[in-house]
Picture 1 (cartoon, rainbow, N blue to C red):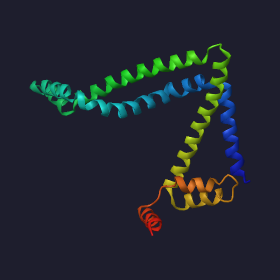
Picture 2 (cartoon, rainbow, N blue to C red):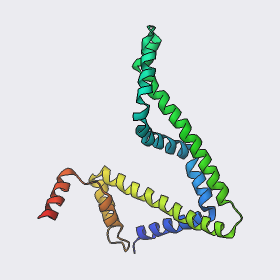
Picture 3 (cartoon, rainbow, N blue to C red):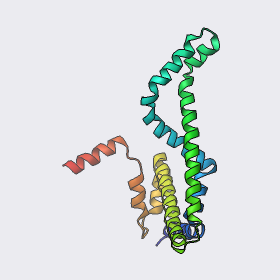
Picture 4 (tube, one colour):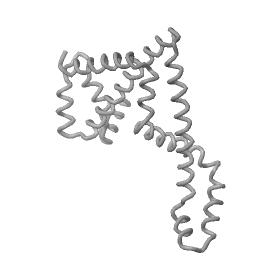
Length: 191
């Protein structure tokens, strides 16, 4: 085993220990409040907002027509700015933020129960949840280094090579493939 393997195992073990220490409720609350909570709310708004935009579009068009019906420059500016879409996403953000706040409070209250089974499950799920988050962060780092490409990615791949955990294969799997390489690999599998 090489140094990178030991670092990887340390991160996994640290994630398991910290997850068991803080429990699922504490870790879930940490990752859904503050800046993480805002990022999650914005991402959910973008994903869900586009799904509900279709049914709301007739009302949004009526709002824009009502704004544009006024002749003053400010209403014309707001109409060209599509203020109705901005208001739609602001309302969506407030709804998502309130739902996130309620869900986090409920999960936190359940996880702080004095029931022995719930305490044990809270610790186990907390360990798995934090380890999954750390692995996703590791995958993201591998992807970004592979995306940068060039000498940086080659040096990093060489640094990972030869480990018992085969992190070099994981890096090559997560590394974005150039279009010509993707076509060549598809052709090799077909032939």
